[in-house]
Image 1 (cartoon, rainbow, N blue to C red):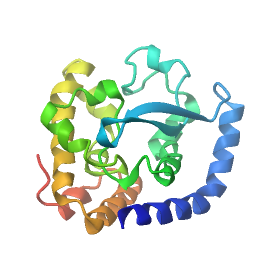
Image 2 (image 1 turned 45 degrees about the horizontal axis):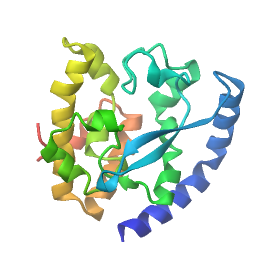
Image 3 (image 1 turned 30 degrees about the horizontal axis):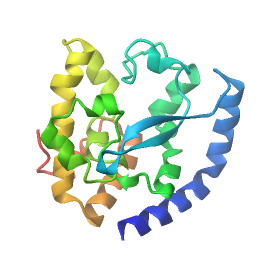
Length: 213
């Protein structure tokens, strides 16, 4: 049932959003480094890898510069147009193709690069790889402004990531594993849309009162 819903919703969303996608493609071709999409290896179901599709928001060589596959607040590698695409989450829209192809689902654990995925404890890894990664999910919503969290931490960025972000993300992904279902998924999709327009909203904690701290 979940796969059927993913196929129907991804096709519907691609059709509805096509008037937005075409102008974005044109703008990206005319600015920055003049390319539109990039794919990045992410860890998927079963621990295998797949190519996550995104609109370009950063310099082409960014994985080999600075903090690598972790984006920091005011990261100089982010292109001017990319800042808008990232803040509006428009850069995530091409992942609808990953959903249509079966690499991802609408809701699930956030797909991470293999290096960052290895920051999870082994117990968390075993649970997370049992699920298809998602365009959104509990971890994605709570850490939607991850760059600011890292920027405001007193710890160096990598230690903040290891000690503060990844343990909480692991707890949220395990929470989803225990509560997953169509109702949970539809609620998470609704909350995702809500926080795009109301980023300071605490609707997530109001709807799901048993989220891990």
